[in-house]
Length: 294
Ligand code: SF4
Image (tube, rainbow, N blue to C red):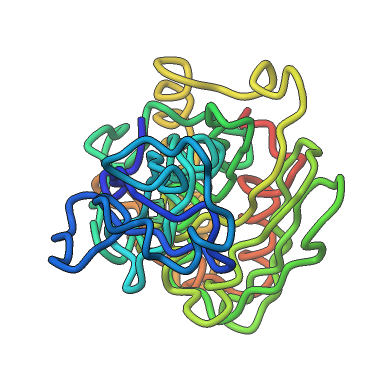
């Protein structure tokens, strides 16, 4: 699938010009334009290298090419058709482009498991992180809606590495406590979502789009260690039950916490109702790279 903002157009340009100026064919041709008429013989650029057997009609240096451009960008920049297919615009990676997100405002995905949204094109790790591998050989990873609901709004995000082969790691600060979020499988990290440093609330409000954390090159067989489709949905439902049980177990502590999971899904930002030790215990149970989902 390509980005809905990716447009294409035929352009013309002069092969002899020092600076290549691309003119869309759809644009009105000026009445005094020389290139596509017999007047090309009076052009200085043509005269610098005249062709002996030039056909009549239009200049032999006038070329046409198919280009693509982003219809959402404030300034139009043409790229050759073949190049745009290699960029995020020409495949499913467009879902993580800031311009696309700003213009399209994609909502929460329709698919969910008992109230926790869960897009079916993603794979899920036992510590509630998702992975999306797209046709261009690029992957994106982030935290799922269960994880982001438990955290609520975070105060700060830092990345441990921004490049190289690692288990990608970010430090999220919630209620003054630093929590280490680690994708459990290593891959070649090429980029982190630095926009989140300016606006970390997107991690909670858009966990599957603008709240992505890591971009990189996937390793073979990564998907074999992750869950998708019906098994992922069944696992998520079990996780909701496990969270209720965890909060029930804290009910004996002063203040009690059972009410945070009363009637089903736990309350948004549940970790903020816990003391530091309880928060770390919950994090270790569900979101550490050693979480097994059991
Ligand atoms: S730059 Fe972004 S919005 Fe524009 S075409 Fe590419 S993916 Fe779409």
